[in-house]
Picture (cartoon, rainbow, N blue to C red):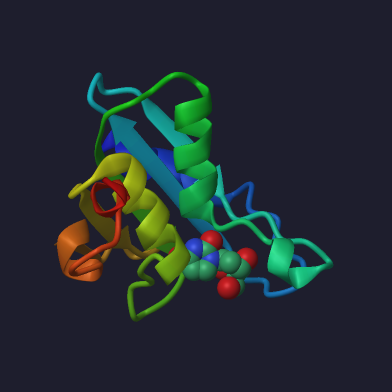
Length: 128
Ligand code: THU
């Protein structure tokens, strides 16, 4: 298993999901090979919950990373869990058409381009 997947699994161990019990781990790799993990962090005011993918990308940006290669997302589900719509939009804005790797605890894996998960995405080019 590669370092990106390992980081996603480690991040999942830190998921704070007392309401859904749905533990999600993510890890994003920047253009320099640096890896940042993220987990979902739930809130008793449910709408304030932060997904694992956004935790990972916001953490990377806060640490100074600007360009990204790929993100891995791990959940203990048979049907591999993709990023939610909000995370797809945030990833598109900050990362562009990156590779999105989904896997589960059996290491069943599927890879996508973000442009396939979020076709005809809105972004800053429309604001010109
Ligand atoms: N969740 C993520 O962290 N990432 C996803 O891709 C899907 C959903 C979280 C949010 C919430 O804590 C729990 O999973 C159930 O929706």
